[in-house]
Length: 181
Image (tube, rainbow, N blue to C red; front, side, top):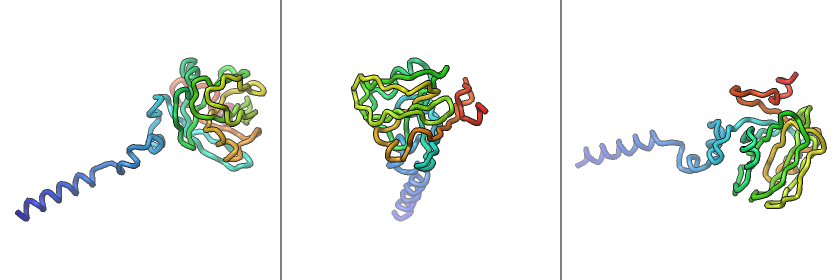
């Protein structure tokens, strides 16, 4: 009887040793973002983005909405987003941007990124479902959506530098400021 118990205990130990990092990490989409290049909810590519300014540097993992269809949907119907997550809407060619919050469930900060890769203006705490136009103060190369209030919490302000690197496939001149240089 004792050899059978030892065998069962050995098998149980082996199975535990081969399991993932545990249920808490496996269940969290945010935990998997750092290892994945695709967002588990939207299926969009996920890239690194950094904002550097007086509030200090801050790193984000953002979904990349490149096509007209992806940009039209944006974060509509999403009920949550991690504190260091967001969505980037590249604008090619650079243009005046105008957004609304139709079918958007969570409050957002819209960070308008100018042609020089610096924050042009921020539409803070955009109200869910509001169809008022939220506009850039000039031509932008991208709009970054963050959780409502996050920009103020981190000290992100007009003039801060925003950098990112687009995926190699279908690359665009709208990558980092160094790539444009």
